[in-house]
Picture 1 (cartoon, one colour):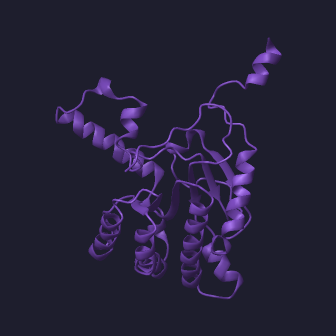
Picture 2: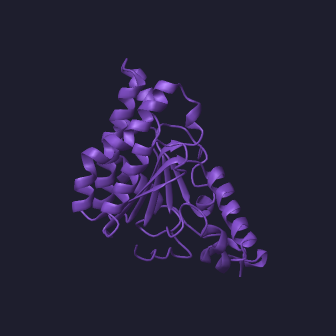
Length: 253
């Protein structure tokens, strides 16, 4: 994988390099149309296809989407089964195009609990696109920010116990290297459609300085124009990463 491009230390670039999206609203979309929730999830797959194409067209390099959380297992069994089928539906219909267009696919999250068939499908998609570097698509599946932080802490503790690391080695960079997102730049922008305004356990460590934008559109309706609107809102932000704006320094002086 190509080395992550650096994020500027001050000011908002016109274009974010890494955008993350909480794909939310499938069930409500279906309910408003008198459809079963399963059809909302299937419509959400089509929205993902549109949004991946839109992101590449708009010059985004990394796109991370939240597909299934560690908390979603508590949903009704029929809905969980439908959610488990979505990666299969997506990869079977789109992996050839992703491979052809230079998209590298990476699935982040726990593989434990997933069926052997789904794990093999994920591994095949990752292997088929491993050499691509035109665009990076990361799918968070069976993922939770808190779970990932706990897993990273356990992996570092295991390294210490095995003599491969010392407690004094632990700093922010060392810890991040044990996360599922290791090697990815932090998201410049996190977008949540559906009108909800929370992260819902998504990229908790990585979101430290991300810009957050909430849009009142359900995920199955999402596409190019909605992503353009999010990028326009991002371009108006002033990212300072804890520093003081230069104008404020001059005014104070």
